[in-house]
Amino acid sequence: MHRFNRKVALITGAAHASRAELMGFGGAAAWLLAGEGGRIVITDIDDDLGEHAAAEMRDAGHEAIYANLDVTDESAWQRVVKDVSDRFGSLDTLVNIAGLQERHSVHDTPLDEWKRVMEVSSTGVFLGMKAVIEPMRNSGGGSIVNISSIAARGGQSYGSAYYMSRGGIVAYSRAASVQLARHRIRVNCILPGWTLTPFTEHLYRSEVQRESRVKRVPLGRWGRPEDVANAILYFASDESSYVTGAELIIDGGVIAQL
Image 1: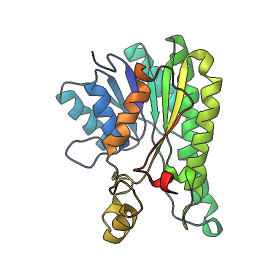
Image 2: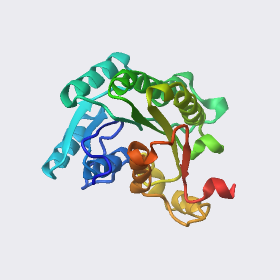
Image 3: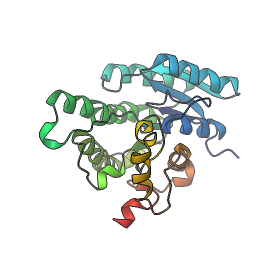
């Protein structure tokens, strides 16, 4: 039996899903969930990449569509969620991945950049969770998986809004897991460490940046997108039917060592 048979997953920030290129968390999760029988909705603001990724998945025999979604726009969320519910008859899983980086310290973070990061990484998660409650409740429950970062567990000499947003995702997921439990909607959070994706490729391509991080990972390597995708599948599937409010760190042992 497939672990996600006929279930519908909406994944944000998932345009990097072509097997011919470096995948992001969303792309790897899309292929994994599709391979387990799922019906996939890739969302992003990069229409060319997103449409290509969905077409590639359909060519491989999977049921997948692409939808443009600005996660900071409440009306866009309402439109996409309604379209998905009307098309598939249900919405079982939301995976919130869309986010932004910034590398300023507290004293030199421009306010406009702070707001931009918080809008995408924090408000986007809030709006997404709010938008899926009704269809999930109507179908008897669902699963929300929010992607944070080990940045929620420590600090470095750079990053201001990014750290705030990552920590907020963890706290908000915990609160939502309690508030939505009565609707049989589970909310769990994943905290990845250094993983090679389009989000971090600029660091990985620098030998100095890459190796300095490898030395701090007890397992001695960077993560792969599929390491996180496997956790997304677990939280999305019925195997985690008694798991909500959980925080899963996937970092090769970095936080444990700290």
